[in-house]
Length: 320
Image (tube, rainbow, N blue to C red; front, top):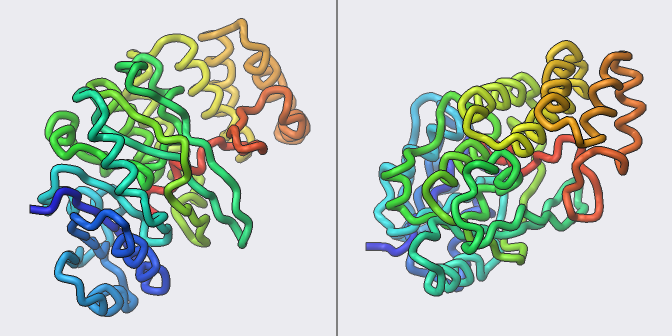
């Protein structure tokens, strides 16, 4: 039985999936199986995958496209390893990813269910460091603050104990964005996290990914809010409401955006950025955009030296 099951969901990425597969096969830690789930591709993905003559590779095909969450869940059902890792078909692992994570697990308390890391974000040839939110084993159960604490953890950086999925379930197939965010919120109710302050993944921003779908973004935020807002402390809830409202207003969805921004202000009235954002939204998209231009005043920082208006690219990685 393999120690690690690596799952790569893919859809019409024949020109990229080979790079992802090679980055797994080139790992310094070699005790794994690699499950490629073809989510109904219409290109030559199957030919590319089967061109790798490695007996550890299992190819599974959906006859119809079901989405990234369903493809990952298919891989989970087929997995035999005691640990599960996920790789997006347009991304790359750095060679020591599994080795470093397995070593961290060997020293971690039993309560730790996931080990995750930072990554490199690559856009149009430019490489930028992405710091994932740091959660350490001694932080314990972070569920009450999870809407704030786990936002920005990319599932492609994570190595997860398989037994945890038996308790918390698999990925929510009703979502097409922020699939990993919702998963880690749920995960945080029962297990501890362990963060590695190293980039172990090259995350490629890819044209035509699900991350360009605004409606999927809004739907995902609203589903996650409805599922979890009753359990969160006020500060965590307010920050999440602010994120939703900020993105909606920037997308021109002012009516919904204002609702969430004023909800954030009501939840946590002492934070000046909620006040600035809420009242700016009353004066239309242009006025709000002008305030957004003053990013250093109130927009969330991504800790990599720059600012990301959505502060959410990691959550978009699912379903690429």
